[in-house]
Amino acid sequence: MISIFANPHRFMALSRWLAPACLVIGVVLIAWSVWQALWIVPQDDYQGGDIMRAMFIHVPSAWLAMGSYMGLALASFVWFIWRHELADMAAKSIAPIGAGYTAMCLATGAIWGKPTWGTWWLWDDARMMSVLLMFFLFLGYMALRAAMDTRQKAARAGAILAMVGAVNVPLIKFSVDIWASIHQGASVIRMDGPAMPAVYLTPLLIGALGHLIFFGALTMILMRAEVWQRRGDVIMARKLAGG
Amino acid sequence: MRSPSPIRAAFRQALAEAWAGGAGALLPIGFFAGAAMLVPFTVGSEANQLAAIGTGVLWVALALASLVSMERLFQADLEDGTLELWAQEDCPLFLIATAKILAHWTVSGLPLVLLTPLIGITLQVPADQLLPAMLAYGLGGLAFFFWGGVAGALAASVPRGGLLIALLALPLFVPTAIFGALAAEPGAAGPNILFLAASTLFALAVAPFAASAALRLAVD
Figure 1 (cartoon, rainbow over the protein chains, first blue to last red):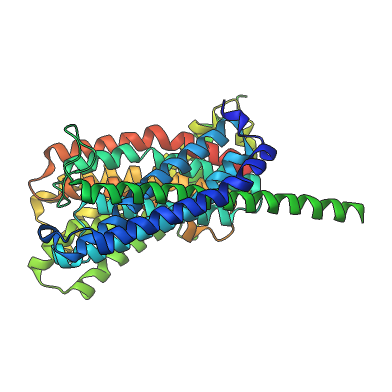
Figure 2 (spheres, chains in turn brown, yellow):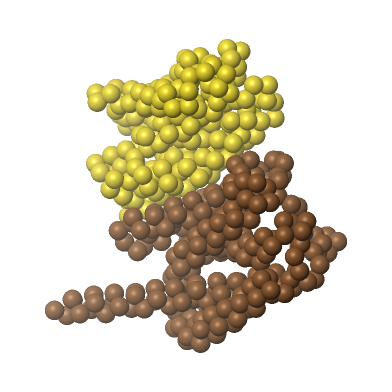
């Protein structure tokens, strides 16, 4: 099934209209959720007043940060086993976007943490640590790819590193269970349904959906750029060979 | 006459290189002791303060010292063609990578672990805690060398890859460092040393295959 989408020509034809469409939809949804967050949603004094409005950026970027690392590992795995070039392009494109979402998650978390917990940063919180760890894994991934002298080597080395990093994810989950966390418990995905009033939940989920679509659009745009770059390299090589 | 098995050859080569001059095996020791020595100057020399952070300082010094020599671990073998010969052996490459990392640990990791009680005393670590902590350093150091070996194999073909190795390996060190620091704390060993041992075994199970995949890539 997946090999239907592994054809670069089909991908280029599809993403030609899908990428801009996703970009517009994503931006509109994010804008709506930010507008809701800043002007419509009532203040919640229990969560520190106005500062809880940071949640509408912080939580989606945390989800996207985790999701993008999963996507990176999955794309690397698919490339490593089946050698579909598009999977490698996807992995290469996801890395900088994922690093950006990870950085945004850390930054908004710090801004939210200062007034509510009284500190910008806490080392003994497992979730903060694992997001920071993921940020460094993204940086290492990009640095390793950049250091390799051929595209094929960059793809192979990157895939190995991404898969080694991904096997650490269960260990991170385990560490969350071991350490007493000062984060609040999960309040969206629970057995007895969301614990959050709909007035907060709806903008949050719409915003998260917007970020997801926006993420997909950015990935497709970077992948298209990569396809064009490779085509350009082929044309250059042909010109040089022809004299 | 049978030629020596590649695993034995890898061990013999690592041991010979360590004593072949250029102070190979002494450099990580010097780095380790020097890094630990800087701490009293920077955080203050009060005995209470040092006792509180002593075991943690040793973990940091051990992690950094195990990265120092990783750059040359596979790079020298790649440059002189040894790696290509290994890749053609009947013996699986992951076994050779394991042998290489273990030999490297014997000459430049084990001495650091044996040195920890001595440096621990100067950092005011309580005397009855030195030996249990040494066990933790031995387990954790082994995991550091295996993850570092993966990073070293990935960066083998990169000129001046030392800093890249540090960036790749340090996130992988984190679970070991967490469990290790918990296990080295006074009176907190118990389950933590088992978690540490588990994370080291995990490294032993995963790292050789990742390292050998990376070595194949360096040879091609």
